[in-house]
Amino acid sequence: MRVVPFLPCHTEYAAKAEELLFPDPWSRDGIENELEKASSVSLAVIDDEGHFAGYLFASDEDCVYIEKIGVLPEYRRKGCGTALIDALCSRCPQDAVLDVRVSNTSAIAFYERLGFERLALRKRFYSSPAEDGYTYIRRKDQNG
Image 1 (cartoon, rainbow, N blue to C red):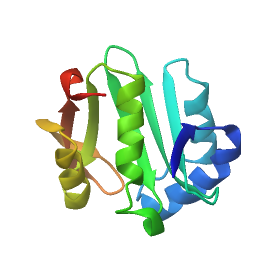
Image 2 (image 1 turned 90 degrees about the vertical axis):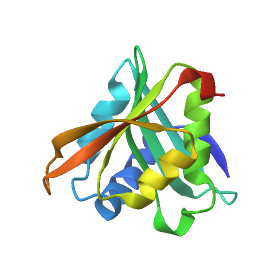
Image 3 (image 1 turned 180 degrees about the vertical axis):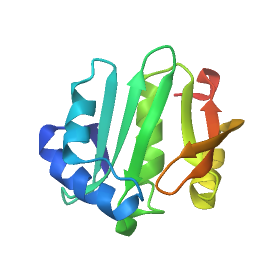
């Protein structure tokens, strides 16, 4: 498996993954808009046979804000998510911040295992369905 820059040819795969993985998926247009942002850091993980396995979208400004990370179900628990986070943090050594639904206990455990610390509870942060979110940070002294 290898982490590569997210390319336009990955957009269709990510759009399909969004539909599969998230209750409020980004559209193909939303993904394309993300790629056009000057602050965008977008990565894909490709398996050893060249198949798309997952992706990460972040904004690199004062801190790195992880906007979306998705790993296809058949690639979970195989290091893809860790590889994406590690690659991002090595490219962008400042603090990394993200939000996660309070009900997403597997993602919370994953982020905490990677050294993210809970900063805050954000009431009604998510819609579709409405839900609170936690904000997490991984301090730059833990990165790459």
